[in-house]
Amino acid sequence: MSSSQIFTPPDCLDPEAKSLSFYLLSLSLSLSLSLSLSQGRQIHKHTQLFIAPSLTCDVLRFCLLFLRSEEETGMYDTHTKDTNNNCNKSLLNDQKERLIQAIRRIKHEIDECKEAARDSYAEAVDVEGQFDEMEREIRAEFQNLHRFLEEEEERDVERLMKEKNRRVKLLQDREAKISTQARDLERAIETLNSKLKEEDSPKLLKEIKDLLKRCEVNFFRPAPVDSEFCSGQFVGPIQYRIWKHMRTSLYPDISMVTFDPETAHPLLRLSAGNTAVRFEEETPLDGTSSSPKRFHYYYTVLGRQAFTHGRHYWEVDVQSKTAWRVGVARDDIPRGAMDTSTEVDGLWTLTLRDGRVRACTYPEATAVRCAAPPTRLGVFLDCDREEVCFYDASTMAPLFCYAMGTVPVPVCPFFNPCDADGGRNRAPLSIFRPAL
Image (cartoon, rainbow, N blue to C red; front, top):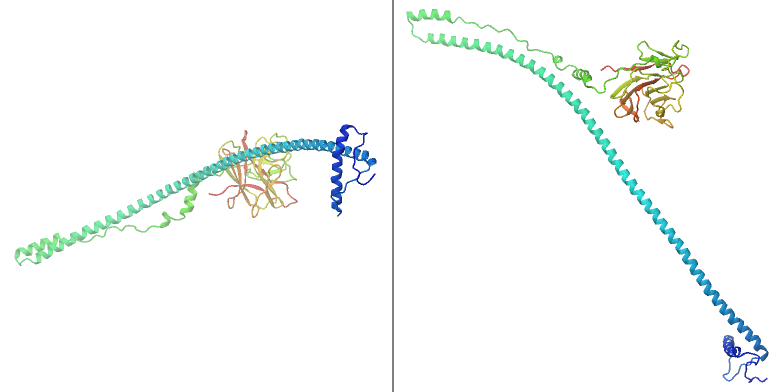
C-alpha cells in the first residue's frame, strides 16, 4: 500500500460502526497532529495520514471502549455529584438543626439570666428593706434614749430653777425690807432739815422736841439669806446618776439567769447561788444521775429560765478558762450523745478550744474573728426575730449571729465549762451581773 492510499473502513463493520469510524478517525487525526506539533514536527499541507488496515479494528475497539468509558464516567460523575449534593444537603440540615438547638439553649440561658436578674433585684430590694427597717429601729431606740435624757434634763433643770427662784425671792425680800427702812430714814432727814430752815421761835422749840421723838428711827438689818450652795446638789456625778436612772428604761434589761441543778451533768459542781459551775471529775454528785432532765454525756447545764418571746441579754464570765461552750439550746435537746451537736440539734453556741473561738455550725465549725478570746461573753436572744447574737461584753463588739428559724419549744441558756484540761481549765464558768 502506498503512502498516498486513503483509509476506508473495512467491510466487516456494520453501518453504525462505519459511521462511527469516521468520527473516531477524525479524532485520531486531531490527536496525532496535536502530538506532532507539540514535538516540533512540520506537517505538509498535502501530506496524507496513512493508517494500516490491520490497526483499524484495534483502533476502533479502543475508541469504542474509550467512548463507552467516557459515557460510564459521565454517568458516574453525575451520580457522584448527585450523591455529594445529597450528602451536603443532609450535612447542612444537621448543622442547621444544631444551630436551632444552640439558639434554643441560648434562649434558655437568657431566660435563666433574666430570672436570676429578677431574683437578684428582689433580693437587693429585700436586703435594702431589712437594713431600712434596722435603721428605723436604731433611730427609734436612740429616740427613746433621747426622750429619756430630755425628760431627765427637764426634771433636773426644773429642780434647779425652783431652788434658784426660792433663793432669789428671799434675797429680793430682804432687799425690799432694807429699801423700806432707807426710805423712812431719808424722810426723817428731810423733815428735820425742813425744821432747821424755819425761823427761831418758842413754838419751833417745842416742835423740834416733838419731832425728835417722832424721828427716832434706826436701821434694823434683816436676817441674812443663805446664798451659798454646792453644785454637787444639782450636778455632781450627773452622768453616773443618769446612767443608773436609765436602767429603768433599758430593753432588754439584764436577765437574771441562774443554773438549773436538775440538768447539770453529774461531774459538774454548782455554787450555792447557782451562778457558777466548774468541772470536778473526782467529786460526782450523788443521787442525781437518775433525773431525766440531767445531761449524762456532755458536761452541760441549762439555765433555769426558759424563753419563748421577747428580747433577753445575759453575760458569762469566762476569764482564766482555756475551754468553754456557751449559748442557747432548746429545752428538749437530747441529754445523751447528739448527731452533730450544732444548730441542727437545737444548739446555737460559741466555743473556745486551743485558743480559738468558733461557732458550732453545721457541717463545719465557723471561725470567729477576734483579736483575743473574750474574758466576758454577752449573749443576746431575740425570740421575736429568731436570732441569737454573741458579743465581747467588755467592748460590746459583735462576734457572731445565728438565724434560729422558728423554734416551737422554749429555749434556755446553755453552759458547758468543759473538762479540767489537765488542770489548766479549773476556773469556774460564772454568770456575770453588770452593776448599773
